[in-house]
Length: 158
Image (tube, rainbow, N blue to C red; front, top):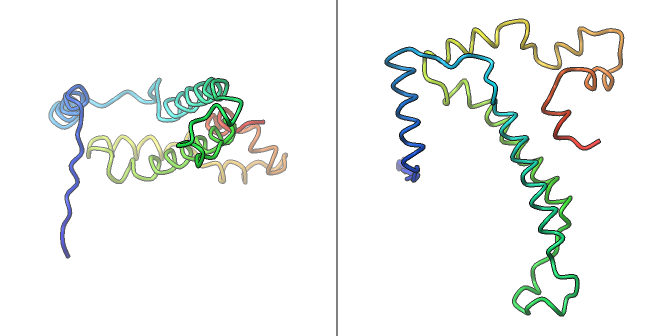
């Protein structure tokens, strides 16, 4: 089987940060204090908010008359801003799922993996299904709404 390589250009600032992280985590055994103030959910939610604001502003800037558009753009179909935001939310949710899955497998150094196992094995980090089945006083929909799941509460429109 032929092995393929992919070259990814990494900006110098990011490269330096990654090298520092590698050194401090692997050589000095210094781990990030958990839970982090800025976690992946916060970053992804901020991106969705930023995207939604930009989509709303760009929707207001679109020409209102087809005759104002050049003929080269006639094949471009207009997609309402709210549909783009919905698509962005779906994409970001996919990134979150991918991140959750790949984090313990490939994104952590060995010392971080030990810390991850310790944190995720605690009672505080029960999966939603286990928490919801342990609660007998509410139906499934109510349980999900009252559970502290910041990802679903902030991203899903009500």
